[in-house]
Length: 236
Image (tube, rainbow, N blue to C red; front, side, top):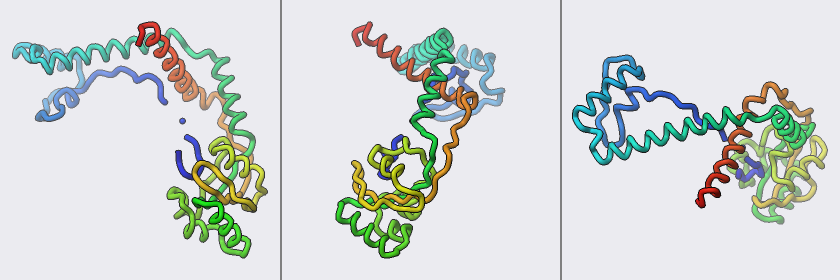
């Protein structure tokens, strides 16, 4: 998790694609060769596989292991694809997840900056310097311990409260626009002094726009749950 207090978000199943000749012709510790043919055609792959079998390469222990693994990978991908087709995410579930995310995001976004220090006394010194008229960005550059924002004067850009750990987001929401927190804010990252530079209405994309990504994310979660059930059934 970044030291600025932000929290972090898996793609769905991979799609099956045919290997290209470039992929088939190279590997760790092996010479890479090039064939003047159209890459990836079924005819070329079949032809080269037949030539390899003539040489008995399929009987090599290492190659046989790789072939078995490749065969299992194809089966696994096919099984996952079939399961996904047979278990589509209902639109009602997608809309429910969308509404939940909207609620978590809230109706406001905040342009926020912060100064992170290790001790409360240091944070109080920072507040004292700011109250004496020192510029927030200058103090951040000289004193902040957050490597991601220090050189930018503490700037964390526009964010929804849900993007931060709770003590940080609570203080952010409670601080008026143009003001900094009058007291240090403690999180697991240290002590913060937070500046609210601006506030605006949250820009939440419409449901139809994010539906594909939402479906993919929920599919991944459903698959993970299904895999856990399969492992449990098989005593794994």
